[in-house]
Amino acid sequence: MNITGADHTSFSVSNLERSLSFYTNVLGFKLLWQREITNQYFRDIVGIPDCVVKAAHLAIPNSSHKLELFEYAAPRGTPAVPKVNQPGSAHLSLYVDDLPAAYEELRAKGVQFRSPPIEIDAGANKGGWALYLLDPDGIPVELFQPPAR
Image (cartoon, rainbow, N blue to C red; front, side, top):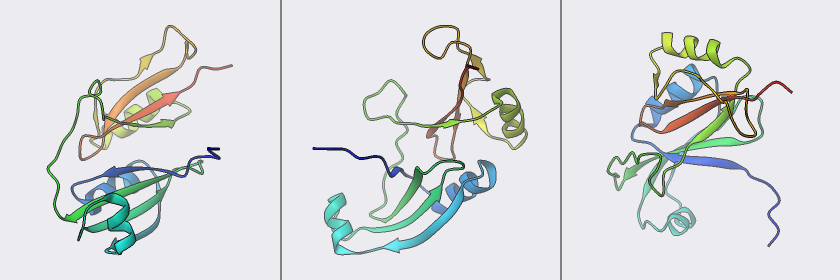
């Protein structure tokens, strides 16, 4: 096998419109497309017969990587927000150029955080900054300011 790149990261969300508002209006992503998926090929890929999915693809600012959001309208899922140390948990990491300023901007917009900006004091990213914020479903999104080189 020869992996040639990465296209997108996908999150299942409880309310697509609410998540779209957060990722576009708060984080500045751009909506590429939105549609309802009922195709048999899709049902076969995800292994859920007769599913109906509200889907959207978003462009991540200054990246070719995309974010895909799925709301399973049928069958509805049960919300599950695993702790970051539990197998199966995931997060999206985004670069920012001024994490303390981004934190203040997002905090003023009511975004929830696991912590304020933390300076990284060891390892390959020593001198950088990082934090986790939470999207409307509690999915962690990391903001990372790399160290100056």
